[in-house]
Image 1 (cartoon, rainbow, N blue to C red):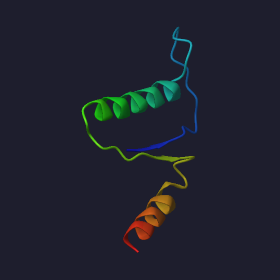
Image 2 (image 1 turned 135 degrees about the vertical axis):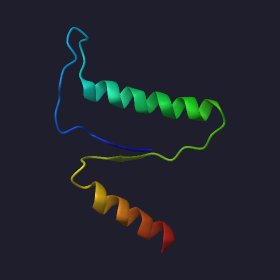
Image 3 (image 1 turned 90 degrees about the vertical axis):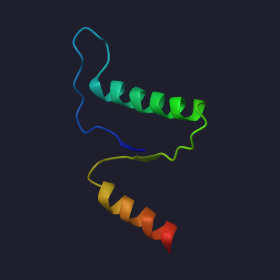
Image 4 (image 1 turned 180 degrees about the vertical axis):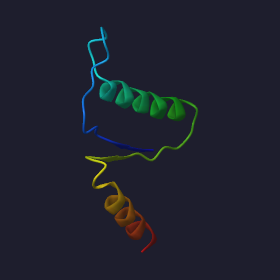
Length: 65
């Protein structure tokens, strides 16, 4: 699973949290659900989407190198 921080913060009306918080919670819940069912999970969290392509290429080069 590849996630990144959101560059914007849009609040969900009357919820008390933002869409960024909701998306991060969903990703964490997905990881927990997969692990609870015995599935292996690899997570990569990137600080921004701007750095995503370079980071992913670098990770694959390290893994395959």
